[in-house]
Amino acid sequence: MITRVARGRAEVVREIRAAAPLLAGPATPTTARGPWLAAALHAAPVPVPRVRHRAVVVDAHQQGRPDGAALLSSAPVLHRGRRVTVHRLLGDGGPPGPPGVAPRRLPAADADAAALLADGVVDMVLGTRGPWQLELTGLPLGDPVLAAVGARLGTGAVFRTTRSRALVDGLDDVGPVRRSTDPGELERWLPAFLAHRPARSRLADVRTLIRVHAAAGVLEHAVVPAGDGARAGLLTLLDGAARRPWFGFGPGLHDAPGQPWVSLVADSRGR
Image 1 (cartoon, helix red, strand yellow):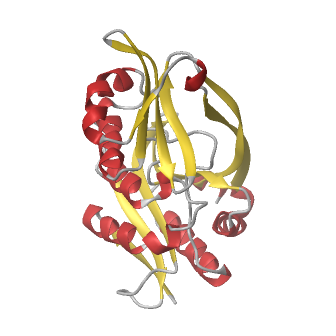
Image 2: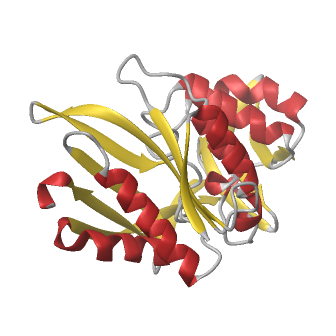
Image 3: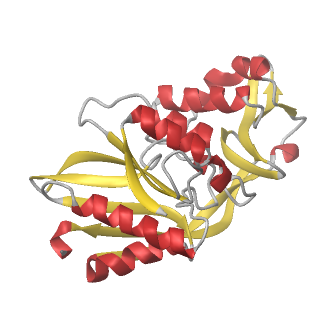
């Protein structure tokens, strides 16, 4: 197996598609699948700085199906008066997905692929010009690639565990609920949902994610009508048999303990 780095938006899109079989398991959340990642790749640009995209890929040969993939974005930021290149997993920093599950993945087919993928990620980061910071956040506990990256970076890597909170659908306790996966019907309620989008998320990004997943038939919208409007509403992403409440408004929604996830942060000062 070899490790290579794909650069640029078009190449990363190809790697997202090629990695689909690695991310096909029932435990993979919507936020780690192709449609969400492609939308994140084409997210509304920020004024500054420029974001660069990379895919670190492990495969037997370049045109084959990958055995491991790390989809990353990097951007220069000002930190304590100095310019630092921050490397993150693709989608991190964009609109949050359904709470309660680890949102990111570093897929690898086996232990050998995980080790090679970790090597590729570390080599890419260490090749950064100037100060850098690596933030691999929102991964499931026990992720083998994350553990291998931490081992290679040594004492400069810090692991953190976060207990998430899940959103619970209690709309049936509020009143008669209209539920549908019809994208056309969703458009009627779209302004209300966008007005209650997750904090610090851009309108254009959330609207794109909603429409992409509605068109694919994996987004349910639920509303409790009240007059000409809605008293409450909820968007739920459908991951196979799993229902993952995303965000909504009004009474009937509450949170509950979710799954823990782990993150790793390292920077060039520890090297």
